Length: 327
Image (tube, rainbow, N blue to C red):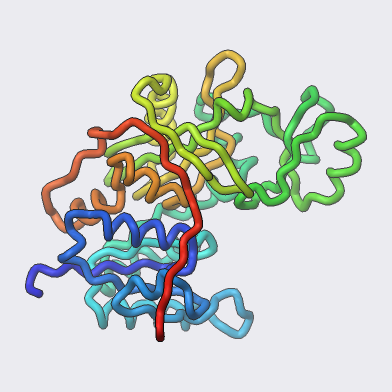
């Protein structure tokens, strides 16, 4: 097909990679797109949604050098003449950020990833809070073991500086809990407990070539560390969107950032986690009319840009599904 668009997605076995694929299948561009997947474990459902799915050398293994992984990736990108490559796994972000310019130069493929500094700030929850504080943005009071001296009142939060899906997250209500939990957390960050669960939002921004293209804030509920329901309403406090804009222009990422925040008791938004990537709620956003994946593809391919503001109010509920194959 002469007008075909070749799109690569890593992490086809991950919730994020599958959300990216589902956004593409929801897009008006779906009939023009060839999907090429990459992963490290065979047999994921996302692999069946792609024309081809490759297993990359596992860079977590000591005997696999980064150069081998990079060479294998570039070979496949060139073979399929990929136009855009989306990243669907957290642990790939630093290595893609490191080699983004080289990959793009070698293949002429747009690699959607932020620079190494943005990845570093987002990966570390203490650095996230420090970045917000240093830029005069609302931030959660945060400490490490080295600088904590009982500055916070209970309840408070203890969690790993580097973590995911609420693993190691602890709501601490007493000194006894503090003393018991603290030694069990590797490199803990100690934070104020912001507001309450009813005022928690998962937010996404799209930032390309030093310009904010769109943002969305969804009130959410959690199940096992992942968003189980997401709600969009047009009466979302404007202060959240103003805050997202200010943070975006200070951080200046490339592509999508996902923010987790709560409103405090004074109604001020405070980000407690940044993910420098697409999130598990990427497809949820698309169901409201905010298809960031479609927008990025159109932007990179110089096609007419879809709207990110014509959104539907309502609620999206996540559920499990099944897929049959005879192969």
